[in-house]
Amino acid sequence: MLSGSSGNQNPCFTPPFSAWHRASDEPILGPRGTGFESRGVFNPAVIIHDGMFVMLYRAQGFDHVSRIGYATSGDGIHFTRHTEPVLIPKAECEERGGVEDPRLVQCDGVFYLTYTGYDRKKAQLCLAISHDLIHWERKGVILPAYEGLWNVGWTKSGAIVSEKLCNRYWMYYLGEGPRHLAQMGVACSADLVHWSDGLDRPVLGVRPGKFDSKVVEPGPPPVLLPQGILLIYNGADDRRSYAPGWALFDRTDPTKVLARADKPILQVECNWERSGKVPNVIFVEGLVRERSRWIFYYGSADTYIGVAMATVPAGG
Image (cartoon, rainbow, N blue to C red; front, top):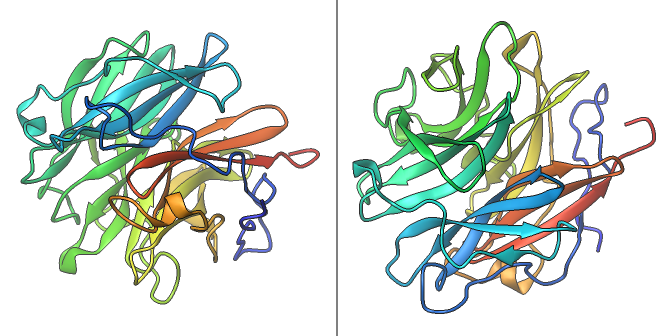
């Protein structure tokens, strides 16, 4: 099923993937049972570990609390779920609301998981680390709400670059500026644990009249290319319909935008993307690149998990 194009606004750069196609016309995971994932499973992070695809996903029960579930796959499409979550609310910033929207990156043999801690009053960007993807050590809130150089609201969605650039680690995240505009910020760190704003303004803002006119939110951890730092992000338009795009940042200055998609690369089409707890949402958080293909994992309508694929062009 053809679903989009590269959406390039800069003829000097072409993303290293073909048009995205859904790899399944149905969700690959959905809510089940009466327990921690009975209301919805969505917004997955995926990584290959020991030859297996490992997925960490947001699960929500009828108690409206979010927890992080765990699933594995041999082919990247058919996943087997563990019966219990691997991360549950424990910290004060997670009470009552839970742990949400994981993003996962491996650096020097350690797994770093950014997630949102939500106490039903505010959302804040948090970090946990692991050596096996099952047992997690919390590092706490890494970008507090209401305390940024430009973000005066909640913080979410930390997408960490896996290597040091300019002698620092970099992370793209969601913040809220004045008038509640949800835009992308950038933070930096010497040790992957202690983070601070890299700019006193958003690094990627909303664009009136486009697919990202209301929200610009990081997706999976960025991919390092010879041409720059490629970041898949999620945009929302004036109708709050979510669709992914991409941006390319400079490797020698991760605060500098080199190119940006003019159109979304996947749009809501299926009934299970249109209908759910939050309708009309495709929200990409997981990405795996294999030799000949890219695999993108997304939450749909805050209820299901879908998967899309794209081929790697020759020489890409």
